[in-house]
Image (cartoon, rainbow, N blue to C red; front, side, top):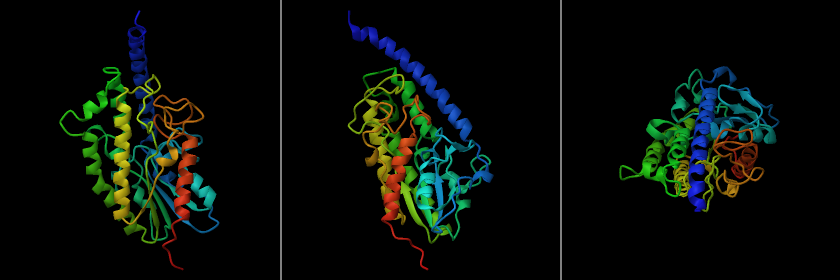
Length: 316
């Protein structure tokens, strides 16, 4: 008997179950994340020893959905996310307005009932971190979860191939690469808006951590329901997004922080305890395909090192 033929339908059923579970988990995350209350913007504030006013802007890669303890159910924000860890280590006064599902639009426009994130900035702001971009590049204008859901749902159609890659290239060009290029001027405008509102602030653009195996290998399973050929495609798409952020940071008077390299080897394919990114069906407290508590600790460390290496802009 051909064991591969026997196992393949079982794996397809497992992948279908995993994709359905993913859809439910992502829907729950989205429901928790919106709308956010403007009154919770400063709920993660920390008394500053050194008088640094720190504003954290961005999406779910900053807010820490699912990670204990959740202090803002509307934005799925944790008090153990990287902004909170940085503030605790430095003694900065933190205003954390990061919110799951945020895109560049939500810097200047409300997200549900949440005020625009730029409302947290002023001339006294000393430090800004920005995690943004991934929710600008999804399917039909949707966010990051639309990419993950699409790839998971397509996987069972060609387990050994790259159905997600084929889907995004079906028109003859790569839709994700096009969306990344289209997001670049929006990130540029975001950086210009930060400098306009917080002219004395040091601004750090935070890259996205390593979600998929850096060597392009696969780990197709119910917990990670992607076809074998799509792992490298998704890795390359994330690298393209980070490369765009590198360029925009350099052009926009900000410092880029690489959180990809420090997290290589801790992607969603690694076993529990070694992975810093949860699979699409999480086994520890975090959102699907997002950093867990260990991931936020690693990201905080990379950001802290970059902050220490960048002299303050404020004089006197």
